[in-house]
Image (cartoon, rainbow, N blue to C red; front, side, top):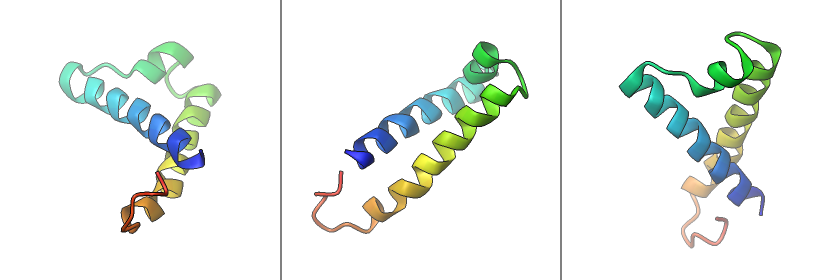
Length: 65
């Protein structure tokens, strides 16, 4: 279950970066304010999700996902 939550957060982060790259629009900063504490918390949670997802890269069975 933890990996599924992490993957969902990574998708949200990836979509946000896609918006930044294509449209120069940061959705998280738009919603919570640029440089605000809430934006930093969201970015931190997505970063932690990325770190927690690293073991899934080395899983040969895919059962961790």
